Length: 146
Image (cartoon, rainbow, N blue to C red; front, top):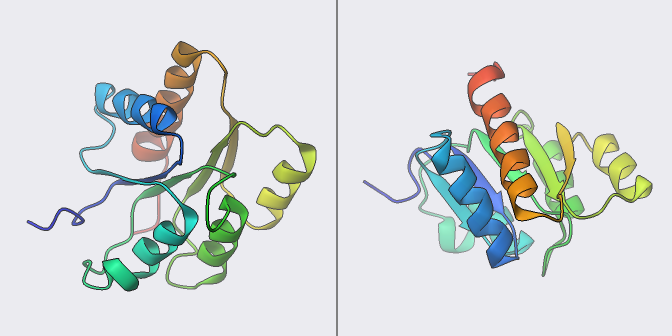
């Protein structure tokens, strides 16, 4: 089985500590069997649109994208803009998980179609709980289009 088949959650996060905490929280809650972690926006766009290194990836979208705002190469706003502008990916739920509580970032994200905007708590236990609750809602409670 290809390691990119049946991706439940695409986590786009450049901070390895935050990524590890998020993946641990999601796995602990048994919310996703298949989590793919990417470290920058350019790689995320290649993955989502199956180009570059991911051109051979199966034609299946992730069920959820957890996206950091401040990313190297291509920022989270640009990734969000491209995902929501494309008919093939527009319906994928995108949750911005970021340290930015700036009003302009929140407003811009919602204007571009983000499904949820979560500010990362500083303490790791609160951060893990926030990610687990977001995963619980989007993976188990939310009814997504087929």
